[in-house]
Length: 362
Image (cartoon, rainbow, N blue to C red):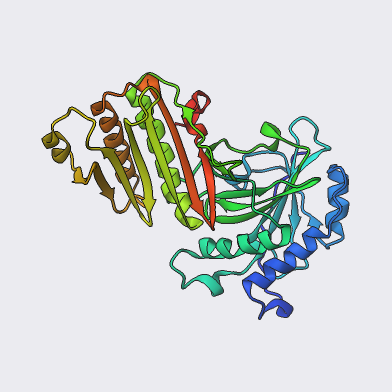
């Protein structure tokens, strides 16, 4: 089965005309949460969605219409009846075409939220998803166990790619930004790992199991590798975390002497970095020449437009690498730890981008 979406006309329905965006989303959740998807066979999913009046829209011959669909095997559905016509896809297992993996609903097509949110500080998709997270959180209960930012981003604009997943028995839920689209996913919980056909995350964060700090080694022996991976991590974090909204802190240090460390944290749209001023044997003039300012026992630098300018993030990463070198830290002894403070939760930060299997993404 290799079927993809066709283009659907967007039709405003009179009975939903005066509904708020949040109410439209809540109505959609009421419909989806009532579904019995069984063991997630394609037939069971089709039967369940048919109870909502959603119609299967095969395309012959198959054609790719959306890069975000990753050119996988999917089945197209029309969101009808509903607030607006829109798009949904059923992704099929690569190994078993009779087994469904996930149902993806494009809320940017199915929910008319522009009128409600176009005057906000961010573009409409960010404003809407910040509200939708709270709604889904209230419906599902508890916080999402995994927050992440995927490695694949559109080249046209520095869109956030933030994603939250609520793992639940039977059907798990995810809500995120895919390029400039708000996407809701229902996922077969029995499907894990690569079978879910998802991009590898640059970062992910989970609720801490305890108060201990999670420290991870950074494999690699060259500063150029460290700089490339650090730039990727900071670019993604600077784009994603303010969307929560939230703040991240990342520390890189010597495993042999943890006091020899540098740090980075976002402050709104800015990125601040720091290094100790009492350890390095490098003269103060060297630090000042490279843009550092000393306050008390630390050196600081700030990059005020890092959220929107990748060049500033790359420059910050270069300064952090140079600072580690000035602190006489070798790349082979590097380790990191970090956290995200968002929505009244302190989360442990993990950066898979620092692992060796992310070479293809850099």
